[in-house]
Length: 355
Ligand code: PMP
Image (tube, rainbow, N blue to C red; front, side, top):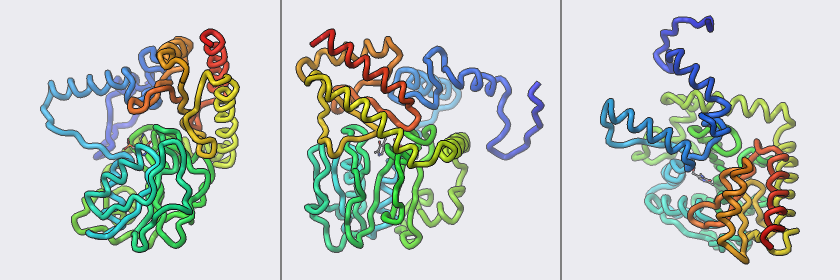
């Protein structure tokens, strides 16, 4: 009925109609969850059941001892392997959990100088960073997803090669790419489903990977093969392509920024107008437009209640990261204004009930 061909492709290859129909049927609302698999948190019970079932099914068929994953975390190792030789110094700015992880991984491959450490609530003033004169690059995280700490300007590091993890604010605002040696970002926040990692790297930084660098992590190989050295995550790339086209139709990154500013303001205003019922732990100068953490300082026990009542109203995944607690609203590009408006009015109602 679908006018399908016989597809003899070596892969990506033919799939059973029954499976495609299932994917189609599940596309907008996976088994009553109210969302697509592409949208659900990988920490949620829905995705956990998908991956658990897949694993159990595979184990029943064939035992596989390990699994492998790419993602932005892979770049934590690829960056020092490509940009620094054994024994070289590299600078890391630590403003939260992700930049700390990146620095920890880089320590395996280079001499890491932590040039500044924040308090998980603010961005340390770049003019006070203790950069090393011979560092091969300066790494920082533009938006700390867990702490909700975001840089509002490109940090000035002189002639140094600036490397930025933009996983959680990529394409949320215009960026002057020419100021950077390398930008990387996982796709699963603003631009598509998990499985794709964007790496934007300046020409002169390519081609110096250490001999021991895994071939998949060598920027010279990936750039030379136009990201097709191996079989890429085709579906995820296709989805990113649809998203990029839509963003351009919708007015580009300036329009994304305006919409994001407006949405973030609704939430930060809801916190500010709650007479202290809610608190944002983050310095106003570094508050993220993407991830908005907040707490109920007078009675943290109420936070659980807040999260479960919100879920009953269709506002889910408001629990803060397990390492910090509290609440966190992630309001990426595709979160409509209506979503944050509903959350903000629920916040007011809940505060009035419990104040
Ligand atoms: N950096 C940041 C800022 C992130 O938010 C994340 C994921 N939450 C990562 C890196 C790691 O990405 P991945 O899970 O794709 O490896």
